[in-house]
Length: 114
Length: 113
Image (cartoon, rainbow over the protein chains, first blue to last red):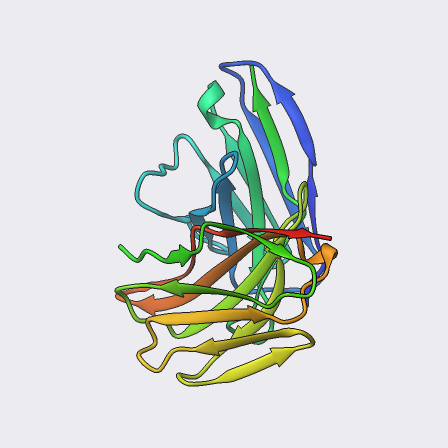
């Protein structure tokens, strides 16, 4: 498995501002993903964070709203831009372990937008 | 796109009872995973399944990868109060230039002591 640290763990933000969430992994991993979990809901894939190239976004998510960086094999950031109350969610970083087919998660970042 | 339908949506059971939940899709997946999520935490991997027909156990948990590769089930035997939480299935898909994990809708389990 991998140890995944996310910061911040929670934050309260004002409408119209942006927040960057950091994800640090204790080992080099190829595949990193960002998910959103709205209150009481399942996990929805936002994008795959590709090292050295632009992220691959799922339908309904765009780079202008959720810019992602992946500067190396152990670190990624997700920015939630121009936030509105509808962006209040838990944002989760996940990585695929050395063995493909095992996906591990950080503790998540709980964002509340007022 | 790929969707995973999980049932039941929620269940209340007595301590000591066995629990069964399943996940179905119209799409084929290469790997099936089962997770448990406690409040305020990220999902924790319980079991991973890699081959059609595979049956795998982890303590009181047993999961199977459906023969058609479009479904999976999770059984919990002799439930205890700490089994309470939300259980998610997830399917790993690759093809057409994409590689991703899709999650089911979740089963909320409550155990009555």
